[in-house]
Image 1 (cartoon, rainbow, N blue to C red):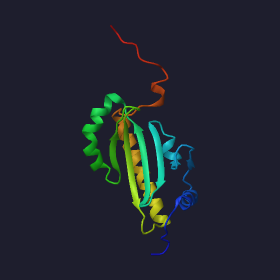
Image 2: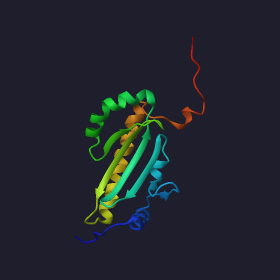
Image 3: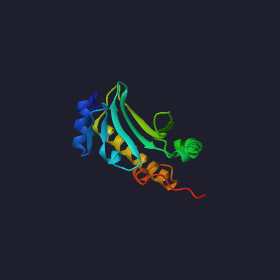
Image 4: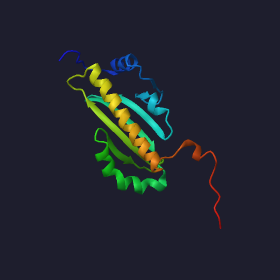
Length: 155
């Protein structure tokens, strides 16, 4: 197959630039952050990782703690509604819960530029649709929620 290569991080960066997909590398991880998703409210991280088996694209969405059970209850339906991404909850004691959307482009035998760009666009599109649905159900935390301080309770 013509144009199939073993892509490394430098090749992926070049392909992202060639396709005019805005990205950057932060000092805290070895992932390529996708600006289109990273700049959206509710997104904690949106990164591409070049792994041994291929290219992994993950997006982490911060879930409102009060919505955690609702998201968990809908997780099977969401995975069926968005078959191109794998969805799971990441819940630990150190941070707010996160809904993680990820996809892997298998590339052990090589990938082409067209294959890579289709993978990125399809995954970003599915993630944006997922975010719209999460926003509709009010599942995600938005940055301005904590700027106003806690709400006053009525007695």
